[in-house]
Image (tube, rainbow, N blue to C red; front, side, top):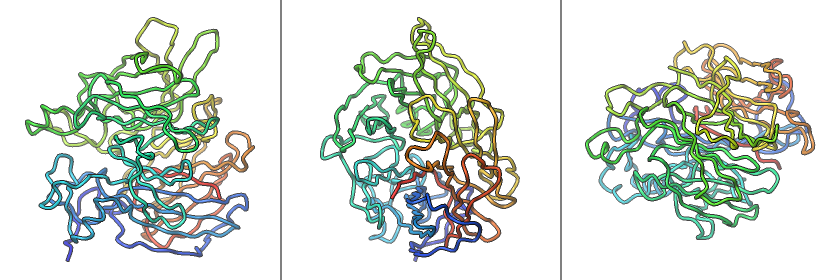
Length: 475
């Protein structure tokens, strides 16, 4: 019999795991109507620990991944959830106990020493006919898009064996998937991989380069012409770890280093720009500009003054909470025709937040509309993001939607109204946790008129714990 979960921050309220897998074929539409134009599935991924921690420590990032799928068709909706059946999941289920720790650097339990630590809990994407569950230290895990059954780890038909970011980028024109992996040379190594996969799922490029130092590199950015590798001082120092220090730590003396490379160039051409210490979990978008006969890379970033959720390098400062400081949406401009290794920064809005998204048809291109989650209350138990935001980057104007007291939003995901719709013409899909009911809802908003509230609110049969990322798949 499994012991109870401890009442720590990220195991309470809607951070607590749900222990049941279920199918609900016909959901109740509690408000409004689902648009007839909406036909597809919203997939969500996040940590959902299957057993309590081994010891007293627990980190939100390390729970086993669970996929939640809401399918919409013909004005109706259905729901399904499944744990990702990684090797870690399967072995622990067989043993009926936790074998792999839920804290960075924690030794495994007896029997878990040789187990591959793949939690597949961060993102869920679809490419070349495969639904891929991702964390950032392992190969992707291939799943069936309809049943959510797990096929197994996917190494691109043997063409790539290293770690893969949870944030690959998709070129809307070529259909290519571009990704990187950090610590590609092994634990604590500064080597990084860069890989390009064509629309058919074949690896067409695979390189290894050395970053300025080993760090937790959560995300990167691409444009139609360039790749941007941001290295921030959330360092991974082998000597520090061997001496009992934290595995990942805020180390501002290392500074920020932003590598930029033309997509048609070799890794030896990466140019490193330097900036003040900061951290960015997620960029919103980037594009290459040739205005005024100068080549510039423009990158819109959700920036923190330090890395949230991790301690300082000396391990004495407790981890910062995401509620301690919200990311600030800023625009970085890199002048590729300048001899300077610095870049400029401009604030885009005064309302902080996280989980920035866009109309993905404009990924890597000049764009106008962005979306993210914000925390405006923050004074309720288990508080998370409570407001969805649309920002018009041309006018600077914002629209906001708040579901109300005791209710919290997940990441917004944009769905175009039609394949040929103008940028921003479509729907925002998201999930809302209702603390009073202790259940979650699927909501659909008009992306051009978010502040008017949902076009439809669909009741789910369970909570969807606060997780990380999701994506929409048509059909």
